[in-house]
Amino acid sequence: MNRQTKQRRAILNLLRRGYYHLTADQIHDDVRKEIPNISKGTVYRNLKVLRELGLVSELSLNDTVSRFEANRESHYHFQCERCGRVFDVDEPIDKELDRRIAKRTGFKISYHQLEFRGLCHNCQQ
Amino acid sequence: MNRQTKQRRAILNLLRRGYYHLTADQIHDDVRKEIPNISKGTVYRNLKVLRELGLVSELSLNDTVSRFEANRESHYHFQCERCGRVFDVDEPIDKELDRRIAKRTGFKISYHQLEFRGLCHNCQQ
DNA sequence: TTAGGTGCAAAACCTTTGCCATCCC
DNA sequence: GGGATGGCAAAGGTTTTGCACCTAA
Image 1: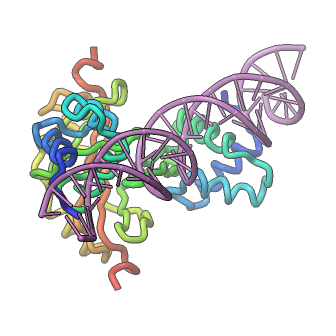
Image 2: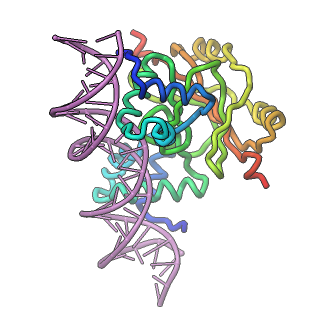
Image 3: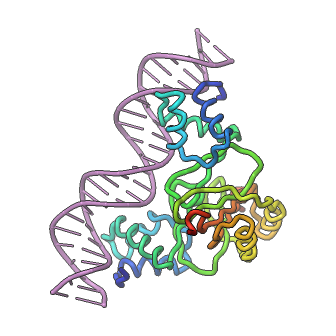
């Protein structure tokens, strides 16, 4: 289930080119510049495959939509409560936290997600 | 915009009675025991008002649906990757973290959300 | 009395899926 | 060649909304 098609390549390249936390719609719009008749179904299907291959991950922030990003060094996010934009936060990941919580709760913990919310630079003015 | 209607009271009471992180559908089903003809529209409209009043908050975990809970001492969550169930995690909130990130990034940070993912007790067997 | 709230049904959104044609390996 | 993938359009699931009728204050 991992053929190289131009659609799949284009989606992954876009996400790797530094355009992170994009919605499926934004991805569709952008890839359409290159492959005008690519359908949204294809975008969703490929995002699903890429997720299963561990190349992409999906974020559910406090939005109605999902956002996608190419996997890389794991990191945290900040989302502006006013304009909705999402930014990366370069705080070192606290691996110890997972172990501590696992020990205390008895859950098997594979990772954690941390999101900050507030006002971005522009929206503070 | 803050009338006491039996619908609104019933929804808030349910969430305060200890039934946390419920979906709108679960809330609807439960409140219907008491108010059989309450509509889903009313549930959503009231959740929106209660959120705006700061009495309820909405969680977007890695699901397709939103979950709602009455506001209380803030806390963290764990969601099982297999069965989808959501649990509270009683780790003390790290307030210092918000200040540190705010100082470093220049964002105004009002709060953070932390979610752990992995396998719950049942699903580890 | 009247602004805010409700029920119902339709609309709006986001995401998934069935079908058949097409393409990669 | 044959299974995986794509395009299109329809279906699914969640949330929002318009409208006419109610009801709390």
